[in-house]
Length: 291
Image (cartoon, rainbow, N blue to C red):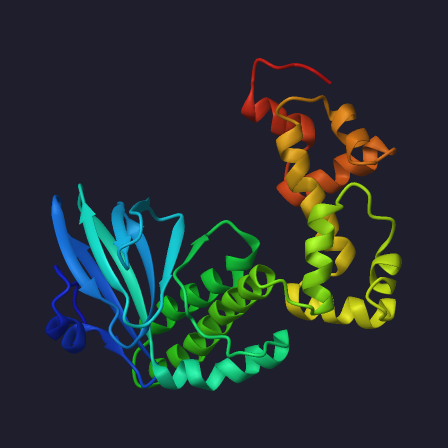
């Protein structure tokens, strides 16, 4: 039987969470001025906040605050010190060993990792980041399925749980590959794109520098990032543009990013952020009327 949990009693978690063979889902309604120490036990645990805020210290590292705009992925056997000042509602997903072990080799092979794509470190993810979009969608589907009547919801929740775990492992593998300076051409390309964003000649030349064809490089890049190389480069340029626009005019920003066609730059920016560069500026600094 499922119910809102008022503390981190392991007995209550085991008896009152929503549980399948692959995942356990726990709802918490924690009172104000609450302090607790708890463990992730043998599970990889995805922690989300529905309303409120937590201050946490994980594995005796530096403490930090997180709210509903961020998720925390804990590796197994993590220790957590938590305090909250106001009433906080949280939703936590415990991912079973069977689920992780089923997907580790799939993600490891996809990323060309010599080691398993395990959840080995604490991962903090902002919900508005592109990498988290499939995770957020999987959670949304899972919450919908939990409200279904009958036994079919167990099957559907497990499907969504597999999708959730797969994308979390991909995020972990992606970050691991970048951090460890993987020789995989896609991760070499990502590092080169970030370091040479304004001087890159073309995607074809980028692929050639890794001695692979443009077609094969594009296929590999999209399989791992979800974007074609040019789409990824454009997205990174638009992110930089959003920062430059705080101090520069639209024209200056476009020229700095090597867009000679201002209308084309405006169209790309609007596609990324849903507003024109000028509208973006006005929303940030209403008093600024520069063009």
